[in-house]
Amino acid sequence: MKRTFFTVQDTEEGMRLDVFLTDKLNKLTRSYIQDLIRGGYVLVNNSKKLKAHYKLKSNDIVDITIPPPKKIEILEEDIPIDILYEDEYLAVIDKPKGMLVHPTQDIYSGTLVNAILYHFDRLSNVGGVLRPGIVHRLDKNTSGLLVIAKRDMIHKALSKQLKDRKMLRIYWAIVEGNIDEDKGVIDTHIGRHPVDRKKMTVIDTQSSRRAITYFKVLKRFGEKYTLVELKLQTGRTHQIRVHMTHIGHPIVGDTVYGSKKQRFKVQGQVLHAKKIGFIHPVTEEYMEFEGELPSYFIKLIKKLEKCYI
Image 1 (tube, rainbow, N blue to C red):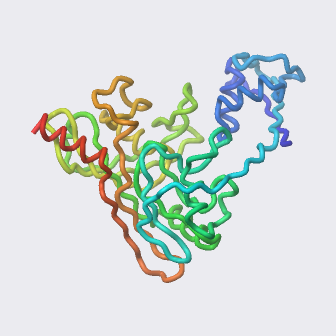
Image 2 (tube, rainbow, N blue to C red):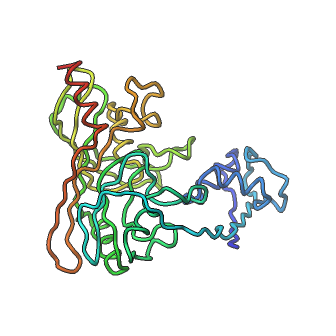
Image 3 (cartoon, one colour):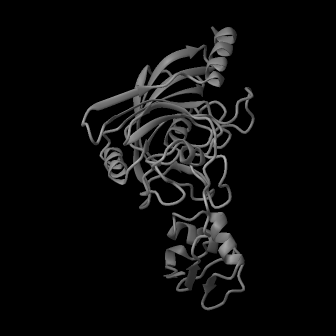
């Protein structure tokens, strides 16, 4: 059990209890905070008969106890995966659309981790029991290339390359509207959305972090859609999706950051991690991999070419 105390400041008076705690404990989701409040793990001035929407007052003492995580056994599963490269230290995987990268407290089957536990005899332990071998992630509905570490030293070396912005990560996306510029850079700060805590947004706060995305137009489909190449300089949560919406060109299929009503029947955002490059931690050789576009992506391009070119 981990117990933490917070004192409500004058500027925080009137905040909902669940929003206040989500801001303070940004690694926890708002829904999980609400579960803790319902379970009596949160006290305000020693009272636990509270609702998530309780409005805090200045100088209130908020006391939260975070229980230890449930012990989950992650089992290997014979799930086919596309392995582009493998040696005794690492592997490069092409993740399909619709697959979670790692288990959560609620979903612990059918993920990429379940698959790589089956396909590889050894994985790094840096990420803990839920994320063995996972150096970086992709959203469930983002397809494309990921590097997997088999040893802790490899994991740490690759993570450092990510942190130092030395790992190449290039994506392709189809976005709404016509991007006027042939190329450009989006340089903002991204942080948790102040109202919808499951979303990220462009915001300049103490907890937000700088996010840089380079874009290049590959093809225009009239005035309606654009095929773009996107290069990550940083790696914030939902960075590309947030940035494209920020400049007025949300990714097709993204009902979270774009329109709820989508013209095309695609499962989530049309976003593919097409290329990855890094220095091999053992051989010190620069390695670069490029995957094929998945069928859902190709079908949509052909449909757009037929309709708008």
